[in-house]
Length: 530
Image (cartoon, rainbow, N blue to C red; front, side, top):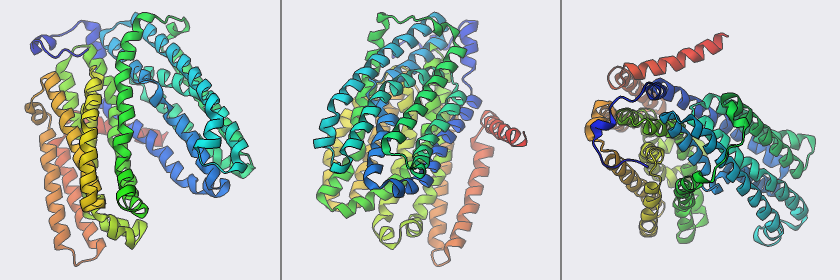
């Protein structure tokens, strides 16, 4: 658990040589490199999905594609129901690495894997048992697809243990900051989830056959993760689970589960209210810009995937100074990467919607997109304290905040949607994520005794001021150039963005930041030459 009180000076004292060497591995260069790999790992499958889904829908038909979508959901997101043990594995293994408690690591891993296997097989039995109910009564599946749907759900039942056990093995690699290995398996595995249906349709395979091949691909990914773990930790060949670790794993994972259950309600409540208080057509005008702008979460999510184990490792090594530096710099990186994109989207929201979806969406959704873009930036910043609190052993705080936000959000959203329509829904969502960010940052500063000087010292405040200046200048140019063509406006904003990048590179980023970025570029150039 996190130490809330105590002399901060004592916590900054040097630790033994082993701890210092482990701690030294958590560098800005490592964080930047891993974040870049994670972003590629999420972006590449996304592009493949966008390109392949139209062909899959035409080949399979809408109803079969709906069943395939449910298969993707179960295989891709069933870790929500692992009671947070995948996340707990990452946290406690990373913490043990920070403390150099090598003997404890194997016990943590085997305990988590054992529980995940038991829960996975229990989940498989449940899904097998309720398949007839789901197909015949719960889901609106055409009668001619009932037989095909039942076979598909029976196959999916056997994928549940694979998905849950995989989360534990990937958690170990995350704890060790081996995102290169994770993405080496995850990228082709994710791509195959879309290519297999595409190839299967062209070969005339039915939905059960396609799902069976996808499951085999996921099983192959699990085998690859197991092999990587065994190569990295040969001691895993010997079973060493212990009941003594169950309490701490479940206590930590339980709060992760609470957040996982409440979060979807907070995410989808606005659409439910729009459909209830306005019209179904209004849902489309809101959902399209929402789904587009929230794709920017790839950037902070890629960073926080590597931050979470880093925070856990540094907490284990009791290095509060490095924790603070990493926290502040991470917020700075999100401001400098996500912020300019949000500014451009806000300035050209109407033009983008006009080109993408037509004049109706440009009329109905421009304000929605602009408000949501601001909310996405705020929420992107909140990714860092969210990962921090979970990494240092306080997952209860984000979960409790979600409980606080839920009733407030329901009331505010109901009022704003009723009074202002789609813009009110966007405002309610943005206010909710702003409250969430305020609570997360406040808790982080209080739990670890951080001060505003920390943000100023690491260039975070300067990054925020630079972004604000960019927004003001961009807005002024947009208003002044309103009578000119869109190409002239884009050219001027592009010049301002280049100026912003130059100022950020020379004044906001320090030598450590610049070296980390140059290291990534040099690695990429070397690969292209080879």
